[in-house]
Length: 168
Image 1 (tube, helix red, strand yellow):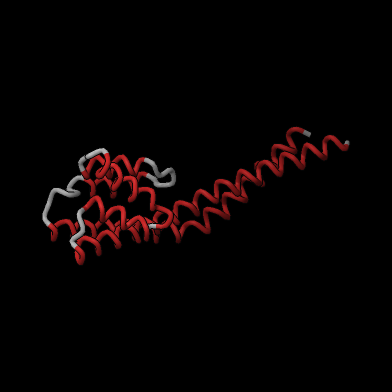
Image 2: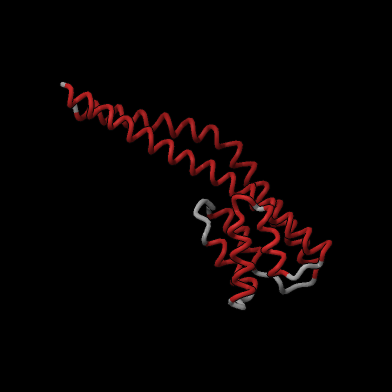
């Protein structure tokens, strides 16, 4: 009887931890989106007001990008050290973030197509458009996150209880 109780507690704990892990992924996605938004804004300012070269501007933007800092610093590093074109460096850098989904990757890929190839004003307009797109995605993610996390935790506990009932 004690072994059954211990097994039930272990199953419940395992499912609860999985629910917590998945809900933390939702929260990390929101942080990555927020970091992207801040990084894009910083990049916009670097280009608009300081006329910083793109590779250096990407590395400077990483400072403000918080959870998405690796994207900006990786793109800057690839452009500086490996002499990679801006579009290719940006595409490589966004692949490294595990929390971004297809909507974000699509918006960031569209941005990459003209990165470093057009004049300053067009660059700034594209940066602003991408930042606004990421902002909209972040707002939608924030509004649905609480409900998703609540649902996820409820489903994992329900699945654990169902499994316990079936096993015992």
